[in-house]
Image (cartoon, rainbow over all chains, first blue to last red; front, top):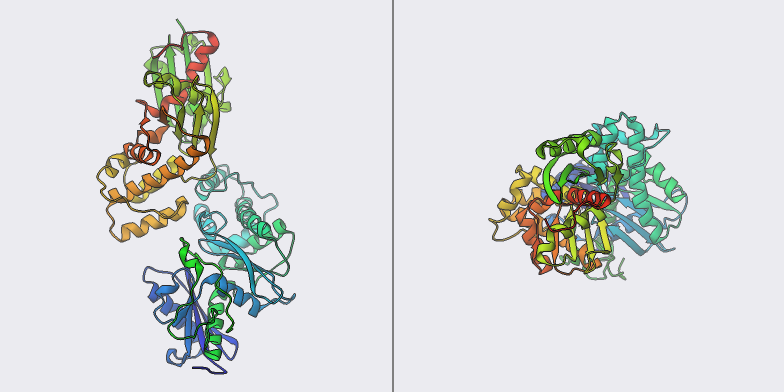
Length: 302
Length: 268
């Protein structure tokens, strides 16, 4: 099955949120975001349904769905799946930036964080990821927002008001949570605590990025990229400006949709195999933990 | 008559031991709460009451633990590695030469390696990550709605400890929620958590080297299941003193006695 103008979708089943993107005529026609629930297939169906509704497309009209993310194998509607490192890299190349080609992708997920480096052609060059420790992930923000009694979405603007961010001595969430509770008891201004939390996440992720080596343009991705306080803190740590795409949460889903598009268009998957029923082999499958993923073999088909 | 006291101002609990002529005459342990100095004063007073002694009779008070500098009553503050070594060697001397101390605290864990003559050779400490500390037990107990004190007996009923893939306490919490949802028996979950903590702490212990006699102390050492998991992971027997959370305070009281030259030397 090959087709020049395929109608495709990508579904990113993440540890915290499930995202979907519908791609029509090489444009993002619709997106959907739902919390990941115990019934993974239902979460995928819900997010995909939202994206289809926004695109004004019936499910039956889709030529192909490709899934990604830690629950990618649970997406029944997907013909293929691809690991999210590949999906992110593909999306970052395709989405690009107003400042030129993307060379570094920093992604903070709900329960992990990753840094990807792309070569001059936009192909994945190397990456590192943290799936072992909740510090430096969206989970850190979630736990702290709860401890502070502040809605997660408001952390960004609150933190930006701070003139004197606190210094958290603990890296570990569990210990930092006790620290934050003591800071609240000491009546430290909320904005200073929030700014300190942002710095903690930024330090952790920034160190990982520095170890891999940061080249501009830097694409900042994942749900927490919507938090302007994290973005500012990370820019401060790295000394570079970050580019946040319009829908930072859905880029892996967009990447999966691009894989679907090319599979329909050229009849091949990223690993070069024929697109039909086959799974994209990924060395990441041997890894454990949410969001485990690694670089797939570079294919000749895409 | 030599009367000394040691106060261990820990992150979670504050402990005091009063030593009279080389014997433990009074003890106390209480939550540290938000005012460490007050907790230290109260612990000391309660231990003195138990010893039927007054603060004026005490020749020297030595404080230790992370809040040791906050106790105004203390004549001296020493670090808890030294205090722990002094206390553990004294308590363990009936078993032979104590060469390794594994201490799991409320928010940290330490391994101390000793020379055959009891001098500290090396130590390792984790105070950065809650995995491998008492905090892990606390979080899981809360999640399972059981008391921390009951975790040991609960895990004794396990026949198939659950595998816990996450190192991080926060991720393990989610994992345990999943295990509960899949109706994995609680004893198996708890036994799995004990294994996870033991494996973390033993990894650290191997870095400094483990030799018998091994003393296991700190509040979580009261947990029989954790002790069994440590023994399985180490392949060695582990000695837990009668009141393992008091070892560091005892060590401080012994150091206080050493300072005034008053008879903490002999085996108690």
